[in-house]
Image: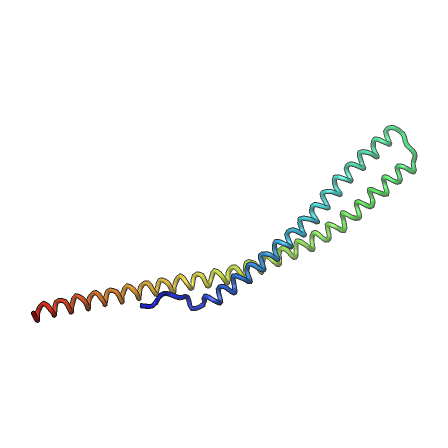
Length: 149
């Protein structure tokens, strides 16, 4: 009996290649989302630092122009954070959509893997039957030879 060969091997290889490409895209999208999240967190720390500085200046008694400058910086950070949160939501939607693509591609590869397993099991059953038939013929021919001699 000839060696087992999965008939859709090339198709599975192609699907696995597509899956890897989709996973790479997902990784890039995750990295972009994480970068936005990092910028939001940095701005949060910067906001807290400036707020503490402003409170310290107020406690010490400072000019109103300095306090307005602090307030302007805090407003700028708030606007940046708002913009980044919108970008983060959009990035998360892209990640979620890509996750769906990766799952679908993974399921396609999985289906082909299961099909290969079934074909391999059938091949093994056929090979076992063929071997059994061969042994049966060998035993029959041996017993016929013994009867003739």
